[in-house]
Length: 74
Image 1 (cartoon, rainbow, N blue to C red):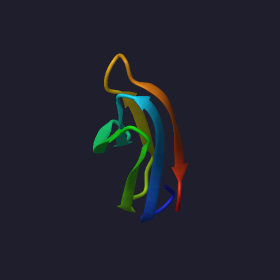
Image 2 (cartoon, rainbow, N blue to C red):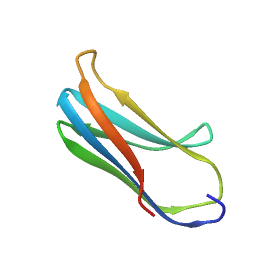
Image 3 (cartoon, rainbow, N blue to C red):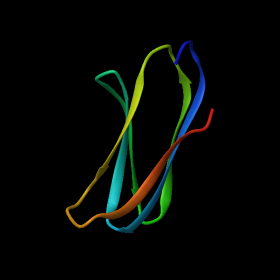
Image 4 (tube, rainbow, N blue to C red):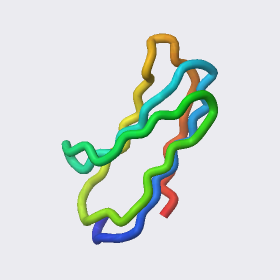
């Protein structure tokens, strides 16, 4: 982000089994975390300050399978 603004990230999951957790970070600081089960989506939205943000998606069990798409909406 080059300046403070309203922002939204959407992670669409296509799990065939298990669940995934998406975590939003600003640098090394954890901002928020959400979990999705089966085909679903996770949304992070709000006003974010200037800085670099990362989205980390992890599977919650050894048997979790499927794919996901991370999209910057606005």
